Each structure stands twice: as C-alpha cells, then as structure tokens.
Image (tube, rainbow, N blue to C red):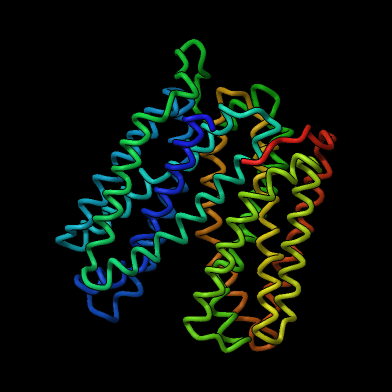
Length: 399
C-alpha cells in the first residue's frame, strides 16, 4: 500500500476516534457548568456548532489544499485539533467549551483533504475501492471512539478529551513521517484566480456534468439521516427495545457497514462499474427502509441491517464518479464541497425527519421510512442526464 494512502486512512480513523471519544462524556462535562435542566439545550447547540463549522470550513480546507498542497493543510489541522482538545480537557468555563467546539469543527474537517489524497494517488478505476476503505476506516473510528470514551469517562469526565488530544498528536506525528505530498501547491499563474469550485467548473464547462451528481450526493446523504436520527426512537416505539438492545443493533450495523465497505465495495465496482454499483446501493437501501417500515418483530431487524449496510456500496461509487468530473487542481475543492454538503444534511436532516416522525407516528410509525425510500426516486432524473459511463473496469485486487 502507498505510504500516503496508508497515512490518509490512518488520519481518518484517528480523527473519527477523536470525535467519538468525547461524545459519551460531553453531557457530564456540561453538568459541571450548567444546571441539569439547561444541559440538553447546551448539548444540542454544541453538536450543531461542530456540524456548522464543518459545513463552512471543509470546503475552505479543501481549496487551500489545492493551492498549498495536501500535506501542509492536513498537518496544521491535526496539530490544531490536538491543541484544541488539550484546552477543552481543562475547560475552566462554559465559554471555553464553546470556543473549543468551534475550533474542533474547523480543524477537524480533515476528511476532505484525506479524500483528495486518495483522488491524487489512485487510478480512476481504483477510487471506489479506496473511498470505500476510507468510509470503513471512519466507521471503525466512530465505533471504537465512543466505546473507549465511555470507559475513560466513567471516572473522570475530562479523560476522553485528553485521549482525543493524544490521538490527534499521534496522527500528526505519523503524518509527518508517512504522508508524502500528493498535490504540490500551484503558483499564482497556475491556479485559478478564484478558489471557488463552482466558478472554476463554469469556466471549464464541467458544471453541467457535475451538478446532477452533486444533487444526487446531497439527496443520498440526506436520506441517510433517517436511520441516524430515528433508529433508537423507532426501535423503542415499535419493538420496545431497551438501551442495551439499541446499542447492540447500532454496533451490529456499524460492524456490518465496515465489512461491506472494506471487502465488497471495490470488488463490486470493478465487476459492475460505478453507475450500476450506485443503483444497486440505492435499491438495497430503499428496500431496507420499506422492510423496516413494515417490520413487526425485533428479530426482523437483523437481516434488514445487512441490507442497509449493503446499501453503503453506492456512496463510494458516486464519489469516484464525482472525482472524475474535475481536474487534479480541484480535487481538494470538490472533496471539501462534498464534506460540506454531508454536514449540511446532518444539520437539517435530523430536524426534518424527527418532525415528520412526530407528526405521523400517531397514524403509522413506519411512514418516515417509506418517505425516505421514495426520496431515492428523486435521484433518477438527475442520473439519467449523465453521459453513459464505462460498464466495468478490469479487475482490481482486494486490499
């Protein structure tokens, strides 16, 4: 494996672990500064602030990496995150915690730069596999982070923040030695006058081909917020799950998702091609939503989990399709825009889908899942506008 690719994947895992480490103890830390009745409000604001900073700054970091190189931006972000988590570990006052979450959102937007490294250093036919591995790495970090954070935070609420600082520091040191520059910063003459992605796409004539894919990407990410927002609530209402069962089901989905991304996505895209893989992922996810809407017993969820995890093969294929629509000098800007769109859906999706669930659950609690499945139909007109793609690539060996 290319050292830069290994470093990029490691950074994604460690960054995800750093995010997940602090989530179980953030409420306990807030209780040190606010009254118990005020804690849920502050907790929601802190989560939203992090996502909002990602929306705003992921595109900026991506564009800066196009101009100044991937390595420098990634190292600065990792160092900033390590320092920020160390400050948050002390958190003497509430406003320091707020500032810390703002800075964490800004410096934690490294996924876009890591994705740009993948686009720089892989052949087009390999990108779906590597984007799948990046998604799997993020899943590993998100699974491991909360588990470790919960154990560390049982005694001392500040301990996970210290661990997050150490993880980002370790990622910084690893990247210093292992991450080679995959994209040299351009000179003023070489780079576009504007750092904006869409402006450059209009000038190059690529906007017509990329706009439908951006629309599909946004819509699929938005649909993905349905289980993210309602899985636990729906399980409690429909199947009378307790907290342990809800956690076990989430862990099972996370593990299945990691396996599919690591072992299936690349091979499937090599065999079928990226567009058929995307359609297959959409169909599997939509079918899982419909089955979940009509499930009446808790045991029925377990095979549905496998179907929903299989739906994850579509997104890496879509990312690979998107990466071919822009030149090498705009991969960072593209990945930053995709990260921003993803975080935007994480802001508006949970709010919208929980409101829909509250409005319809009295009549039929499965309604929101059917709505999510039907939203996939809105992707089809945009995908039909695309020029025919290659059916398949030559076989690519597994990782």
